[in-house]
Image 1 (cartoon, rainbow, N blue to C red):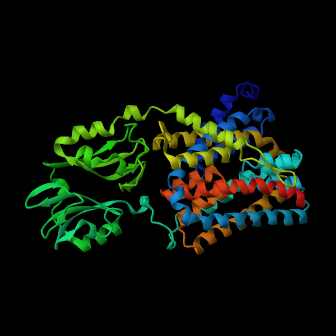
Image 2: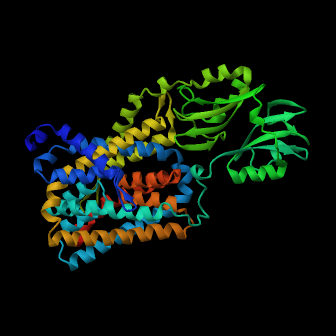
Image 3: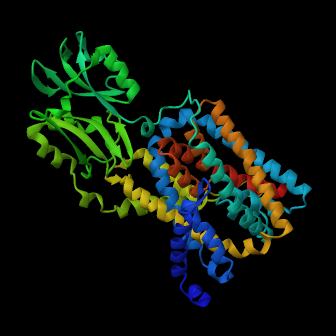
Amino acid sequence: MINFLVSYPLVTIMGVLSLGALLGQIKFGPLRFGAAGALFVGLMVGMLDPRLGDGMTLVKSLGVGLFCYTVGLAAGSTFLSDLKRQWTLMLAGVVGLLLMAGFGVGVGRMVNLSSGHVAGLFAGVLTSPAIDAAQHATNNSPDTLVGYAVSYPTGVIVAMIIVAMVAPKRWPGKRDNTSMAEAGITAVSTLVTHDTRMSEIPGWPSRIRMSYLRRAGEMRLITAADYLHHGDIVLVVGMPDDVQGAVEFLGHPSEMRLTENRRDVDYRRFLVSNPHLAGRTIGDINVRSNLDGIVTRVRRGDLEMLATDDLILQPGDRVLAVVPRGRMGDAQDFFGDSENRISQLDALTLGLGIALGLLAGAIRVPLPGGINFELGSAAGPLIVGMVLGALHRTGPFRWDLPHATNSVLRQMGLMIFLACVGLATGPAFLSQAFSLIGLKILLVSAVALVLGALVVLLGAKWLGLSAQRAAGGFAGFVGQPAVLGYANQLVNDERIDSAYGALFALGTVVKILLVQVIPLLL
């Protein structure tokens, strides 16, 4: 059987994936490993024979590149808007990494760990692609791989326990934005009790949308030029607090439900499959001129968003359009509304984007002291993905992927990467994990990670950021895709991905530099 698995490595990887998925569904108290199950199954299988982990470099690079690129695309769309909130969290992450490196060097010297052990455990507990730089800096010492193999699963387990404790929390995040996924979107039919201009309504049009207008028994769509009169009934759409403020300004909720009358004005969800709309803002597509209508909401995956004029559409979004009843067919043609078209993967932009990321990761920059810096196959695709996710489209190239497609590719890339890591490091893990050296590495790495977590999480709380952004930032600080996946299983919150992308990119750069400095200090 072993010889068969060695001869057919793809069978081995797929077997590890399936068994890892099964292990990932088993609950251990409050903890469920999810995608990280592939790592632990890979470790167990890899222990059986060192040959099972041979030749995994290419497949591992494909998996991590695919995962990081899709995460970058998702995080890039909100990274720039969130940068003002997150730069302090990023600074806290750098401080945490410096503290961990200093702790590892100091305690490692006290307990007689070699420079290879410390450099390897630093890269491993932070589950970082910096292991390549660490091996180069330690002249490919076998101690480096031992430190990495023992501390890698330690980092995954400790980080997941910490995320399980933090992600569901609700501490005051006074300087953070409200999660759209958490708050949701509401619509209230409102009776106007005093005359007012549209421009005087608080929150319009940036935080609330208005669609229906019933006046003197007739229903039509509201326009920016309308002057509202006493007795009008309008529909106000937005996040609950914003809607409440607008309703109180206009009058009070009406017993009439405007959306129940669909004779003259109708609404429906349409799937955005028209390639000419993807990557363009709601304001740019000009629904008012093209359809005599308005888009009030956009659903992306499980996230419901207000359709503000500056919101950029992505393929696979489901828009709620309110149009005159006779123009429903025109609206369907305008948005595309085709499941078949949206299921077709744009392999051109996907392949080009990942290739650009891998090229960026392969660029080596020499630094003083004999240190070489390169982003590698993880950080390169992540950063390029974030840039392209922020651009959305460049001429004819549309970089965004449908949300469902992005999620599938992300999950597959993650599990392939973790399975290959487990298979490759299984023999080294077996040789040292249950020895005194292994115990020292495990304890030093676990304590170092807890110290780093305290800096990031307490820093986030002190800075007024939400627990969910803090959890996403910590997952990025660790650099472990499985921890991000676990955080997203616990809480549906777009701030997790945004913070992960920010700290993962910056943290990877700092880690690559630090693992090359550590051997110089020991």
